[in-house]
Amino acid sequence: MSVGENKAIALRWFDAQSARTKEDFATMDKLTAPDFVYHHPMSPTVRTHEERKQNVVIPLAKAFPDGKYSVDDVVAEGDEVVFRYTIRGTQKGEYMGIPPTNKRIELTSICILRLAEGKVAEMWVENNAMVFMQQLGVIPLPAGYFHVKQ
Image (cartoon, rainbow, N blue to C red; front, side):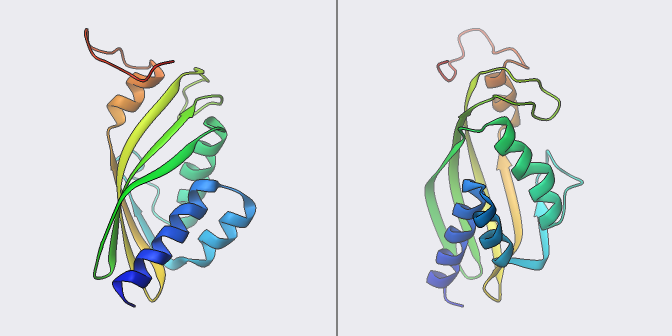
């Protein structure tokens, strides 16, 4: 597939997993390769598409029901598409064992998708987990550090 086609597929896939409705999950499932592999330092045991959906996407949606994703940059070359995106939301439910804090988060991440035969086959995500935990109030902020306004 062309770089443009890969970029369009990746954007559809990203939008579907970001919206988090049953219809969107069907689109995401259709655009995910059967041998999909997920790489994230905070989720080292989550590897497959279904594991990611059940252990990352759905819990995140429940914990941050007002969560909104914005794609800030997209770069594509060959079979890879790179996103820089931001999620903003308020923690209203438990997440990773953290009870609801009602605190707002704004977390920027970098995601690399590798496509094969028109489907997302592999995903790498990097973000600053420490900043995320500081925004939730789990880890104290250093003196003079700015944070998302509550």
